[in-house]
Length: 298
Image 1 (cartoon, rainbow, N blue to C red):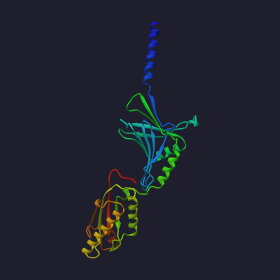
Image 2: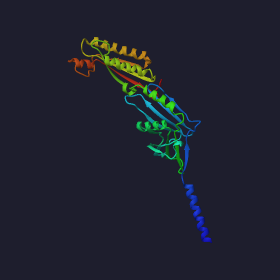
Image 3: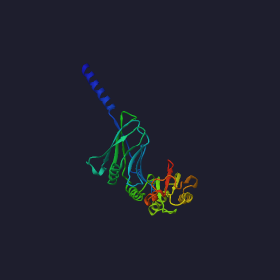
Image 4: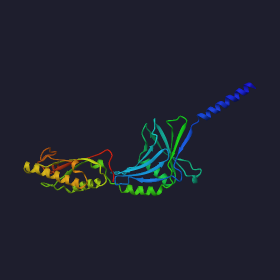
């Protein structure tokens, strides 16, 4: 009996060890009562749709102004990764679709001390799944415990209303970003401080942008002329052009003390002055905008 008793004890010990070693799943999700979706930073420059996951972090969908439609998903975790790995992102069906399998969305790369994110196509798919009542869910190994797996779910409860507002916000975004206007070359009519029609339209774009971003830290304005006419006259004309542009930016809400201007007259040509086309290129203003790292969006 003693060998049998020893064998049974050994089997029980192995089973016990296997039970202890088997990873458990820690689940994070907003419940039916606490689930909320909020539209934040709803401006002409940025739209954010935010979902809080209690004790885990925030799921954030972001779209920004620009030439092309932008969309990005970011999982902002309270405890950021302490290593490198992948999170499997799947779409879990609601309870009333019993028997239906979870649908794969993406493998999200996780980097040490960074939030995880997904590009436009996968972020769009997640929004579509949420609209249909599915729960995009992340599964990944816990860096802080070898015994645990993490499951973090986005709850579709109360999603639709904020999602539709988010779509309206995205539709109202400017079709250009700060990077598109940070360096601008404007052209002038001959012997005048009047801009060409195309440059007037460009300046109107800048004015519209400045309505929404109040964190312009510095504006540099350099103006130039062609060589038609006397040098002194052209020096004065370039200074007049610079002054007019400075007044424009002040009226647009930029502090006059951060605007630097300089008129170069005929100096620093970028084209020959013996042709009409070359002189038109030389009649220009170069405007550079510098923004602080944390823009004030309105």
